[in-house]
Image (cartoon, rainbow, N blue to C red; front, side, top):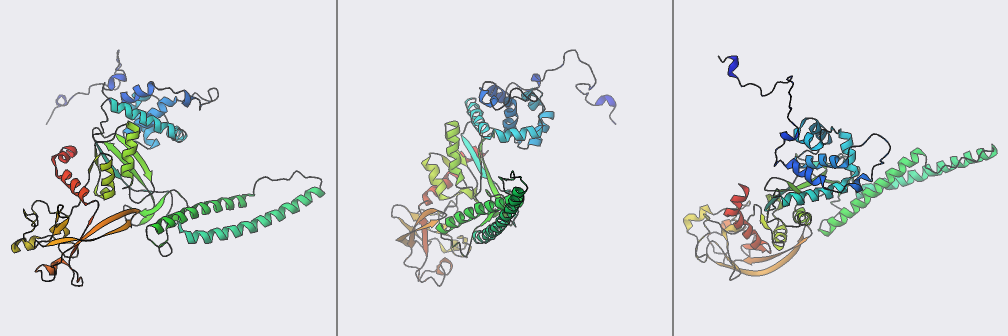
Length: 470
């Protein structure tokens, strides 16, 4: 059994009085990121911030430099809650150093964050530029993603435009009745006051019940406007709002009814964040009321360029944001796009990957040909020939272009070219290639983004991607 002198001694005694105590500054490394915040904020002009304070009355306030430092440094460290920030100010050495021992309560932090929302955003951008000049942010690779958070609106408090119209009509009728009753009461009281010699009764505000009703009417009108706008948007996308009307939240009007992460539907928001791959700094963030954050990907790149005056070199995201339109917009911006891209061309190890696609795949490899969800041959079994602008089927038969079609998908026009094999009738693979009811044979559709998907898939399989995510 180990004796008492076996264990390591504590480096300091809690109750020992020291002649030369360690300074707070000595506890923070010279290259610690917290020093960046202090240097940047100390060199700024705070006169416009100071102008918001009275300067004479009340208790001496904490300078906005330290309030901003606590909030922005907390964001950098992943601390957003005002209560968590209050706790950090009391117990974390880096916060103690940054705030010079000031202990800021959560209420003060919350009020400051609300009052100076826009200036804080500008300040965050300035700090980001300085961090980039110091090499803490490189923008060589950035990663983008979104999530789902619940709004301050219950699932039961969502209504369609039709329901909101009916509710507004009922409220208008009730308001008119209550207003007539109030006017009659005011007239009777005014007559009584005149007879009594007192004519000072001239109210300028609505009575309590009428004022509350008026506020309800305004909220219903605002919700109705949002519902009608959403129905119009849905109609442009080819969805009939009469049979499939949009439901809008009536409490948190900026939110939107969308799927929950855990299942079901509720009023939610979709926050997004883009982080720098070097040290994990958040270089862009936004909260949107959309189900899918895909459209926000290129917008994030534009905001990063505006903030740091430089575009990211590489953009990494998940499979939910791999749409062809995003790939096209990234290529137009000169940004390398990385996402799991599904391509319809055979890759290495695929039976259809052969030197000459005009030759048939050996029959013994037919069982290895991949199938789609319907049990038919997958599109990757058909090889595209860019020189001849045609496909070759597993039997080596040509599938020439027969027509092109165009359609609107989620507000974006998608153009596709259709290729068809003309010798399907007597093919030995016909039973697993196309449905029996299809008398014209197998067709392959190729949209305008297919080449971009292939380039993305090649990039994902290359060594550059391996280096980036390692």
